[in-house]
Length: 332
Image (cartoon, rainbow, N blue to C red):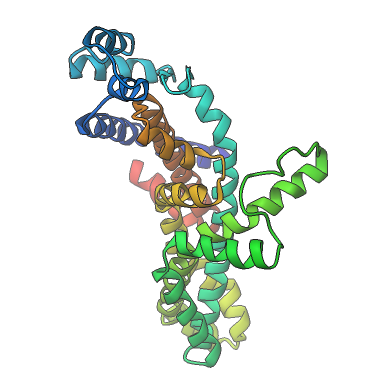
């Protein structure tokens, strides 16, 4: 069984390779269309620079080559996970990205757990309760959360919970200058993580709540639910054992698709909270015209999206084995 599931997920990963290539190609040419380059940024910071100096810089970073040659060189390098050199930081791009990857992964995983977990819970309650007071409150909360900008939520959280109440830190991933280790350090990081994770989760929690409610209502109308009621099963058993298992699949689909969007949202959240992750690094590299670093972040993001969708497919097969069987039959 696990061998079959492994092949199923491996097939999804292989199918994702052309998608990664397409994303890399589109990002490469779109970024090159923007005015300015690394040489102009460095010259501007120096106050002035001769044409000879700028030509030297362009030759150093390969910017003097035709665009198609730059693209082929870039594709050849990233095939071996060589993402180039950051002129801004004076270090390999891969080193910079992997230093920040852990912080962003922690933020995204925490936000995903909060948004999907509470989205499924609140959506299920709203569907079961119908037009009751609890159901209306949940849907009003979902609409407000969906319409509220992330940066505003983050700023309000800082004002209320950090500045006024003093419950959580205003920024950073850990206390500055602390020498905490072990469990004490983990708790300190968790305390810094609370506000950024909830802020990033707010929009997606509202989305999953509405989607789960709609999916639950649609599933409750299916024939197998009527049959279960005719057999005398309680509403609680019908919902928990049968309806929830089927209704959850669209939410998982949306969660897999929304990984790239959540990574984009992390740029805003990390900037507001000073969270040292890939989002903040992408924001800084964009204004510094550090194209290699920016492309490296996009490249890694596309890989994360493909892997996440493969994991979602694996979860599908665990929740509903019929999906795997259908896939196997399609290959025959």
